[in-house]
Length: 625
Image 1 (cartoon, rainbow, N blue to C red):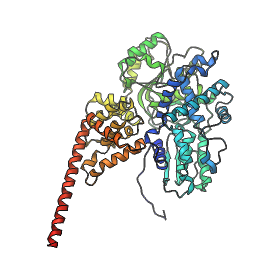
Image 2: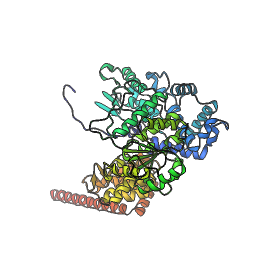
Image 3: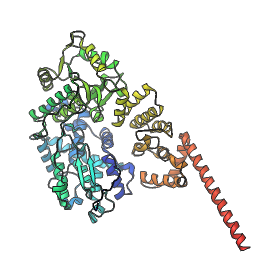
């Protein structure tokens, strides 16, 4: 600025928290608890589906594709098209000067056109399209009835906000950054991206990172559209695109996996192209490079399907290994395959969406392609994400990999190319000629650990696998505060808010670990839509505990708590507030300690004030006399 470099701290936030903050700025009357991020939106859609939708209505009884369908797969397919296209896609030919008039949903003609572009000649049947639109209408009424806004509704409201248009470039409510980096853009809908571009209209430079091969969220994402839309909108705002425009750059190094896994990853990407699963540009499809000094690692192992192999895999391998050593990955959170692990600890299983961004020493990909074969494009992307989670070892089991199937041909060709090992029977002799396949796999998994369990726990904590992190820290037993933190996060994920708050309250007041502490442990909890009054106030107290000991802060606590209540619930009902406060004191022992401490400080404040007033009056009387 004026030839001077101005230093400022980086602001780090999730994209949804960024959108949420400005939604509340432009629409302060909207309760925070009404705002749903993408995972909360799916959870609400799932509740709506269970209460009001019969999955069988989407399929003709004689439809061949129905044989691969069940309630879960149909739900996810419908959610993808409602969330990613009908509500999430930007209208074709959008005029930026009239964005404030954008519609609530994508018209059917444009919906079909986007399907045609994405799937070429594969377009939903008349029955499918009509039923999806009816479901969308029912879903919107459900959201309205429960006073909820999903992530696409939030994006639309931000785009329509009058304050952002009245003084474009001069609106004080809009952020002004010198540079912005948006990560994991492939998991954002077009509507969310457009809202972000709109909010960042005063920012100078944007960088967006995405990987189309890892599109596991229900979005109609296209890297070309994202870049073009960003540049076109900036051009509309009068910016010099030659200087500040977004250009395509490609990164090809993989720093996570061993050479053998990277070779297999390249094979999957080549399969994307050859099978017309995804159209890739020349630079985009270039071979993923192996960094120098990367170890060769263990070659991925494909275990052929069969009752005995499955039994041995589950009973003689998986049951004897912790999740920190061998992580099982399923296609969905509600995968049918989870029934094969009835005795497994909840930390021992995860799904593709939950594990995205994570890395594990070894992974078992269990029926990923089998359970997603109803949608080939989705299936191979899910498989790609799962296959890139492992550092050193990958084990593959696919029930549907029968001779002659597409899955079999894919895996068999990889074996013929020398990219994976093929195990016909787990009791046969392994390639080393000294032990069975079962013993060989156990050795590969246990000897391939290059990260300690605690490092795996740190990764799990960073990427939201709190149950796994909790189990590792609890087994280690050396850090009680970290154990309590992870336990609280795991309970919070299960909506056990009382248990979560009790765990957070047991964290030492002075504990700190890489920015984590007792005060900010409840940040995500406070944003949970289902959090009720007493639990909310208890969580709020933990987040504001420092106020007791900071001079000049404590006397404002009650007013600040009421303002937080109003922000969360939309209005302040004083009777409900004090009833919730009473309940919170009865439910949580630390609340009584907090209120008592605050009361003592307030009493001391009033006593000091009274003494000061008395002294002043005495001086005045002396002067009068």
